[in-house]
Each structure stands twice: as structure tokens, then as C-alpha cells.
Image (cartoon, rainbow, N blue to C red; front, side, top):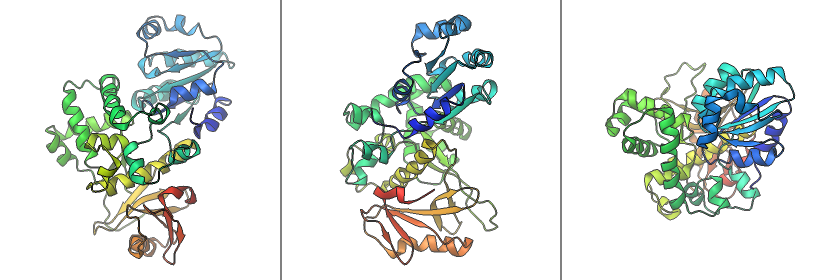
Length: 384
């Protein structure tokens, strides 16, 4: 098993909370991780129809088999169980449950209703570049990292991306989409997902997306919510707090895994990506994903933002906490250029925040007179 950064946080929270809920995309490694960390707890997959039926029809009888607790996998399949788990952990502090699920919307809604204050919630995303490096998987070119993606099974079982992702999409549609929403035209939904991939790193125009997909704007928004709830895409929100200038307030669209986005775009090799019109957007996606993974692996709910004036000047990634804003420009070019810092300098003049970074596609990180130039291989140099 590739060692996961989140493991330490997961163990720590399991010692403090009677329930720990681990969510994340299908195939991100949740089951492998919880089995490895909690071998003393019985493991039950609620994907199995007979066990799921037992849990549905006789929840008390089902849970009575687990006197000390259990690992319940894909628990969003039986959300009513959570109410019974609440009663059990309230009455017996020695019982511990580890819950996993790949549907964020259904699971989090039920947890908020029944397990508030009793369950810690963590998110396991696909492997980070640092986790891959630590396990001996090193990319020489970022194009190959973008194309291959970071799902663990690709590396564990040495599966080609061209074999992994079509099967992943089929499984995702059959299991998660139909669970979340009654979508009758599955082919139309897949085409919609492909259109989303074609908008990676771009401002989201709901009307344009709906028109291209041949659906209503309300349907497009509903389908986007399904893709978000099942960890396929996310919307990066603009940062405009405390600013009086005219700023763009539409979100930008990204995928949780660039390999999946490439598959939806029909990209079949890292070399093919070299001349693709979305290369820059996909590189942005790769880098921003790494910051999101860093936050989630620390148990943090922080989210990056972007900043953009209506004149077109923008900061691709803005990391915000209670006290500081850290601007990060992302450039796919592999040769350093002073022009890479233009937007950082504009941001500094506008906000008075002097520290900023440019992440680029080259291999060498440098301190320049304009600011810090960071290789995509050295993202750990950016402390947030």
C-alpha cells in the first residue's frame, strides 16, 4: 500500500471521536486505508446487496453484530443506519465506528443531522505528487503526471490510463449518479461531463454550458451538483471580500483528477497533451489540486480561491487564511520569464501584499528579483 499522508490525522481523530467519517472519490483508496489502520474492527461493505438489505430491514439486528464497532464501507447506501449508530455511541463510549462513503452530498447531509459533534470528517483525495514521489513514482514531465492522473489503482496494479478511466466512468455512472439523481439519459450526462472537461480552468458560464449540452440551465446546475457531490469536479470561487473594484464573481471549473479530465477530452498520451489547447488549464488544475490535497491531508477545510479583475488581470490561485493572502500564478511554460510575475506585481500594488509565487513547468526553483519562481516539482516550498 502506498503510504497516505492522511493516515496520521485519521488515527489521531479516531482516538478522540466515537465516529470518524472518511469521504472521497470512488477508488481514491478509502477502503485500503481504513482496513490497514483499523485491522481490529470488523469490515463490512454495504455495496453487497445481502448485507445492505439486512441493514435496511433490521438495522438494530445488523448493528448488534458489532459490539465494539466496525468499519462500514459505502455507508451512504444505508443512511438510516446513522441514527442507530448515534444511539449506540451515546450509550457506550467504548464503541467506535469508521464510516466511508463516496457520495459527499448524501453522506454529509445525514451526518449533519444525526452525528453532529460525534463524528470527525476527513476527505481522502487521489494521491498527491508527494505521496507518489515517496513511493518511488516520479514524473520527469508534468504532462505525464496530468495525463496519468493520481488514482492509486493505476500505480498499484499498473493499469494504463486508457484502460482505467473508461471503466471508472462506467462504474461511476452506474453506481453514484443513479444513487444521487434520477438521470434517465446517461449518455447525455456523460456528454455533459465531457463538456465540463473542455472548460477546465475557465470561467463557468452556465447558460453556455447548458446550451452546448442541449439541456436547460437548471438541469446543467443540477448535473454540476451531482458531479461535485461525487468528487468529479469542483468550482473554484473568486475572492472578492473587502475589495471595492469591479471583480469577476463567476467561479472557475476544475476536476479532482486531471487524468479523468484528459480521458473525457480524448487525450490518449502525455505527448498528445503537448499541443492541446487546454494544456495550460490542465496544468493549473494539477497544481491547484495539490494545494487542496495538502489541506485535506491536514484535516483542514480551507479552499483556494482565484482573483480576477474585469480588465483580465488575475491570480490563478489565492490561498487565504485568517490573516494572510498568498497569491500564486501558475504558468505551464518551462522557461522562466520576468513576465510571469506581472500579475503578482499588479496584485501587490493593489493589496500591499508583497509575498507571492509563480509555479511554472520548469525543473529549477529560483529566488528572483521579482519574486519566488517555484518548479511544479517543489510545491512543498510554498508554506501554507
